[in-house]
Length: 59
Picture 1 (tube, rainbow, N blue to C red):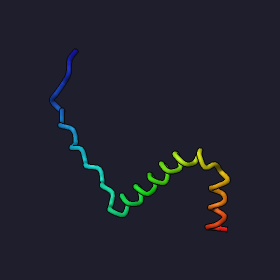
Picture 2 (tube, helix red, strand yellow):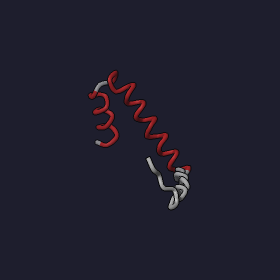
Picture 3 (spheres, rainbow, N blue to C red):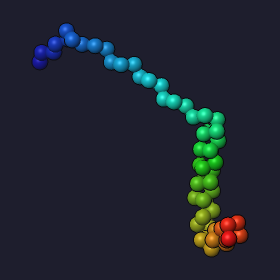
């Protein structure tokens, strides 16, 4: 197999991914914590407990 390397250029450098701000990290941690808590306590508590809490807070 013949490969021609005359017009070869090195690949573009990889750009670093942007980092989250401190506020963004804090929000992400809260979202993950709430989701993890719902994963653990949701099946145990049942829907009626969450509906009751929702009614107390927002109703």
